[in-house]
Amino acid sequence: MKDWKRKLYIIIFKSHTPAGKAFDLALLVFILLSILTVILESVADIREDYARLLISLEWFFTITFTIEYILRIITAPRPLRYILSFYGIVDLLSILPTYLAFFYQGSKFLVVIRGLRLLRIFRILKLSRFLGEAETLKRALQGSVAKIIVFIGAVMTIVIIIGALMYLIEGPENGFDNIPVSIYWAVVTITTVGYGDIAPQTTEGQMLATLLMLLGYGIIAVPTGIVSAELTRADRRSRPTVMACPNCKPEDHQPDASYCRFCGLQLNKTTKPADH
Image (cartoon, rainbow, N blue to C red; front, side, top):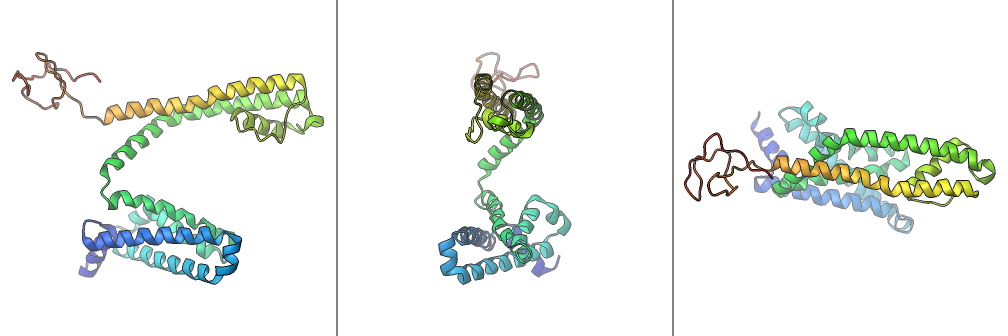
């Protein structure tokens, strides 16, 4: 790697040097300001009074991020690996909306995707403890996927059945024009949202709605319990295994400890890990 490319690489991709940390912090400030610009532009009164300023700022930030993205590709040891990485994709998506605005005006508001780039703050500020907790949460969510998919499938089956029943009970005369509309009502009801745009009028329909509402409260707790159980399991796996001394019973010895730190007893292979 050429000397200038190596220096740029350290500044752009690393944060252990003063220049690298200053670059990343400046980048975070620019991201926050660009998001604020888009938010202000969505307010009609502000847009009418400061339209030219807001558009100029948005293009300034977009061009800045475009140059930064190109420099990342040029200086990265493996450009394709960076392009296909999570941050590489986010960096690209953060600059595309402004250019797409030439074809579709509303797309520029998608630049709020830049908020994902703020995740770099954990790396910049060396918040490794939070990264570890994020990894635990990631493992818990991955372990919950299969169970939640099965759960959602069961819920979808319930709302389809109850939606069809409600269509038969209430019918178009009470606002349940077809089965899809009835399924929509069932989803709104079972999630306890309750928009109120459609409501059963007959006694049978109200009884079925009451049953669905009560079922909804129980259903809400299921995914929470699944993820909570997986979080507990993932947290236990992330903790280091400790050894218990068979003599004095303390359980804060590392697995490779040779002797008990309290009574001096030799900890051999028969010593079992302590249960948590």
